[in-house]
Length: 287
View 1 (cartoon, rainbow, N blue to C red):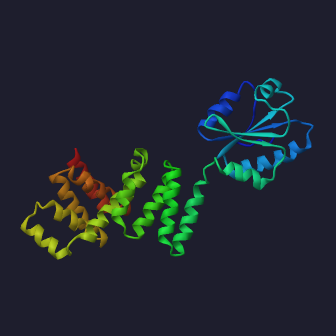
View 2: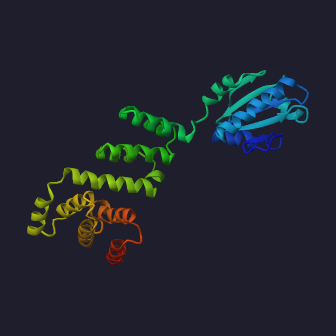
View 3: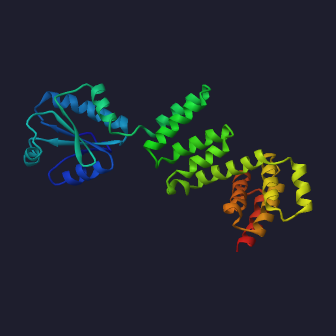
């Protein structure tokens, strides 16, 4: 056999773990073959080519019917080549005789998730052609199929961010699995969207400055003014105001001031003087 990462020899000893247990996590295709059967070798070449193409999205388990007679008998195999596709511990497809590559691919695709970059690439192409809603729908559908695929979700959030649909970002994130919400890249996109949304809804900078002169402890005004400064790339003003709110209430608005400062540090880089200065001040407050 070729030394492929997702192709295995099936035996009576490893069948339960290799096939039944692994099929709880994804599709497993069992190929019953015999050394002296020409159709088996032709089919084998097709199956290994598909295994390489799918890159582990299904396991291929080859069972030699001449050396694994008890296993073959237990599974009711009477002719070769015979394929059995397992999913969730059960046989979901049985295929007898040599099949074309396209026919096999159609069967496999029923139970195998799409390649991680396929939906993303398709969505980006769709977005670039001006079909924004269709692009987002592709990502939402793919994210429903693969809720743990952080790259899909991050791409959807980035497109929403480009479209200035900040409220939609919060709605999207609210239904994500907790482990995805906790990812730093997702958190950064969420915070960026919140600050941009604040800036979008805020009065102009002069009005906010007047409010803060009158009421320096108006944290809503301070946070909105920080958001406006952030949009204007006035990072020093943004950090000064965020630090001010942080000193008043470190938990304000779900710790948004702290999170927004971290986003700005990420934008500026660790070697930037503002990052060094305000990170030290932030740590002093949080201690």
